[in-house]
Image (cartoon, rainbow, N blue to C red; front, side, top):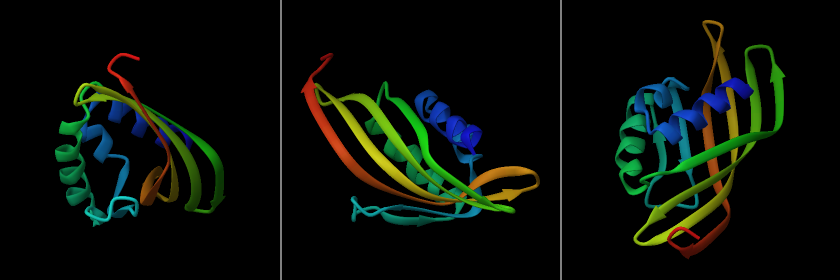
Length: 130
């Protein structure tokens, strides 16, 4: 599970839609309840398309993630993970922290995200570079 999360975080920082998309199951769901204008996106292709478009607003992002808890039961698992992001936007440096509640599935010997639900915990804004 840690490898899945680290692969996801690495792909975000590198802004790599192929590697990022490969962390999702084909029938996955991504929910962003703190962003009602986005809501829930279903299916890997739609999730990757939405993420690719959204990433245009996050140049130079540095994304980190680490697990808070992992519970495995056969070929399914639940994970709570925390995130820290730093990026510049409109002349301001933003630092966001959040939490994901995840369901993961093991398909073909590989762990993938089946569902992810993200909530904001903290946002900090400072002049660019601070």
